[in-house]
Image (tube, rainbow, N blue to C red; front, side, top):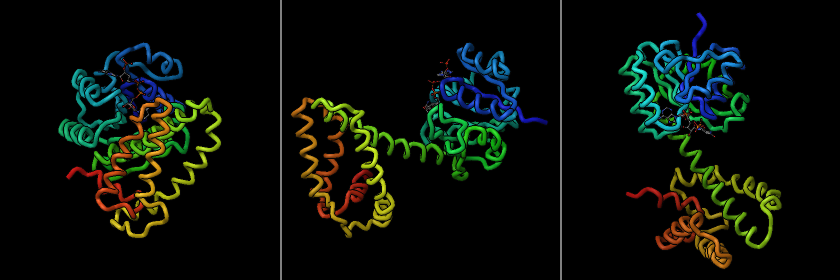
Amino acid sequence: MTQQITFLGLGAMGSALARAALDARLDVTVWNRTPERAEPLVAVGATAAADSTAAIAAADLVVICLLDYPAVRAVLDAAGASLSGKTILNLTNGTPEQARGLAAWAEAEGAAYLDGGIMATPPMIGQAETLILTSGSATAHATAHDALKSFGSSRYLGGDPGHAALYDLALLTAMYGMFGGYLHGTALLRADGIAAEGFVELVQPWLTAMQASLPEMARQIDHGDHGRNVGSNLAMQAAAYVNLIDASRARKLSTDLVEPLQRLLLKAVATGRGDHDIASMAELIPLD
Ligand code: FVH
């Protein structure tokens, strides 16, 4: 029998996921708290469920993409539908602890649980290179194969249902660090009348060149090997960083985005890491 897939949550991402599944000619039922959001999907072949209980009852595979975990629990609790024998693929952003908690709850209800992290924006869903991270039940991963394939590429990270969320948050942390630095850089330029658009041709190759150092940084972090400095020691970087702060203040810019890193840099120098590379600062992040 054809697999029945229900999508709970038709926000920007849930709608993109359901549309990709429809494009792949999968059998799709949809439900959303605000029912009007189902209409564009019904127009292209989805079945709208009357309520969340019916939506879950119709499904072999329940794909959940809601704002947050409290919304997920609210929807599942209100539905009160039996989850026994169902497979849940939860693509809602959350913490590893939330994912593990929901997995334990779902498994106690008789469902197979796969957690996921979407490393994409809604317009990217359906493209082959779009990455979805998953972890949790291997059986659920196999059941979700066709749906995941319709969304893009997926990477299964093993049986711990918290790992997809953990990698997701680690990747988002790296992304926000980059965007935060980029926003502050554009503010420095714009304060002197230089458009952000004029910065693009310089900042993109610069960030590409800098990210080439990530493998060596990873090696130093994993091995605690900070002795082999490659010419950009932390004492030098702390001295240069002061200029970035001073230039920001001179232009009456907030230093909220850049001061936390300066604090860590100064702490690194104060704790004897002045002749180390920047990877050495990773040692200062754990609080105990
Ligand atoms: N959009 C993105 O770029 C990112 C990409 C990476 C993954 N995230 C995560 O995906 C989850 C959903 O995000 P979204 O973009 O679809 O978010 P919204 O468009 O704001 O839609 C939110 C949906 O959640 C429903 N909802 C919210 N609260 C409740 C509730 N208490 N009970 C039932 N449903 C609820 C909301 O319903 P409605 O407002 O239309 O009635 C939408 O369906 C999210 O975890 C991202 O972090 C997206």
